[in-house]
Amino acid sequence: MKATRREDVEIRWFTDGVFNGTRIEKNRCIYKSKDGTERITSFGQVTRDATTGRLFVERRCITVQPLNIMDIIKKVKETGGVVVVLPP
Image (cartoon, rainbow, N blue to C red; front, side, top):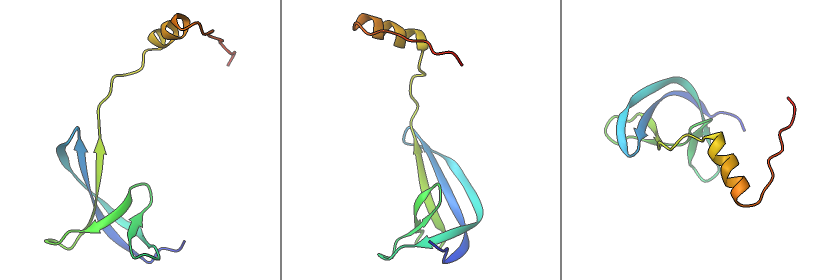
């Protein structure tokens, strides 16, 4: 797919539903699909802000508990599974 034009895009960051701030991606390739929607790579579909006229996309993130390998091994052994360690 060929880019239809290049334009600055505003990225609006949200973490756990709370607005964290914005970042401007300069000169990004805008791709237009047959149904008329516009998108940029790695961020997805973009929309145009009615007040400023600038393209924007929202990135929504959530925080999760980190994985602990010992907890995973314990659960595998509790359920009757076997842990196999492969050499690097």
